[in-house]
Length: 151
Ligand SMILES: [Zn+2]
Ligand SMILES: [Zn+2]
Image (tube, rainbow, N blue to C red):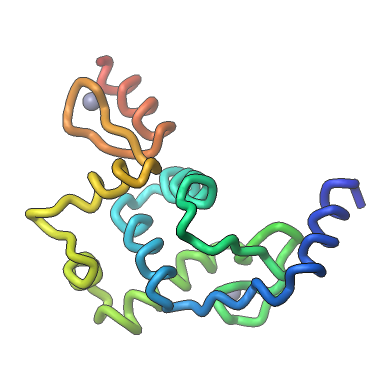
């Protein structure tokens, strides 16, 4: 076991009471709303990472060794989900609360054709705007887009 994971474990033991943010809570759903709009895994992961460091109103979540989808599986230190179960949980939340409809999810949070959820992600400091077109995405996604679009 390396020093870093040992530190993480101690941190986790000391803060076990913090690992109780209920799935489906308002904050959890608001956070997921931002994640839902882009489909590629890299963007979602980058969004998640930037959201955890830039959104000070969100609780700090600490993985506790059990998959957060609720399946009961053990997961590696530092991970919230076993492989693919983040998607399972996302789909389940959407199904349980929004009839499986992303449009319903957006409407519920005041977003839609006249209020851009992508712009909200930019305003939150998690996403960036392409300087040459209307493309919005995580910093790495925008870099990738600019390379492909050659602008
Ligand atoms: Zn799971
Ligand atoms: Zn562009």
